Length: 234
Image (cartoon, rainbow, N blue to C red; front, side):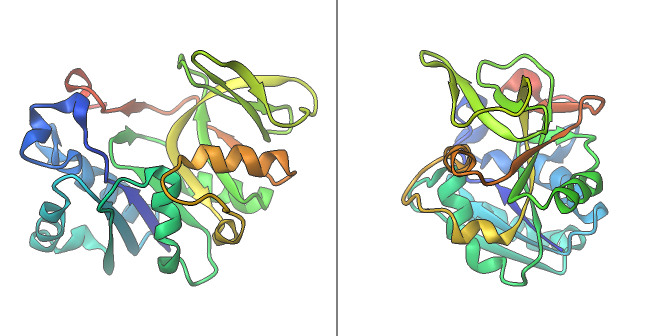
């Protein structure tokens, strides 16, 4: 099984730690964020990973080589001379997902106890293009899902609530956890170019009737390690 780790971000909120290292190599409890994410992916059955690179990204390949790729059979890299965003980054890495199988995508700065196997199973059962790990939590940018668990809109600061399609039943705002299971069929449907967020593509696809679904993980521990005060064990 394959996965992608988003590790290209500058980590500006983690300065000065990220002045000399990429965000992926910032440590929590003596272990880098990248190591902890890869350990979770390997435990879920992932054997091959592609990592996107930008800020000080040249430090990541030797770090992984020194540690025998933390048990992975293969690690590939997707350098981004200019940041492409989550959507552009995934699109550039499309060549890696050439086996027709669904894959996991994981933000490098997310630590959690989310059951990745259950997430994959949920995507398989739904047949969705993408299934997002989501939970009920406070966030200024929630996504809206309807009673059937389909993405129907979002809330944006300054823009308010935006719905791209009519919900089936009621709606609920949920926080995206930065972890998802994706069908490789997505690459034939992403028309966006350059730098863009993957949620932009998902909302456009939802508007056309494509299934982008929720997998609720409300009972899991989760943290976005985007600020120095977040760099502590779960």
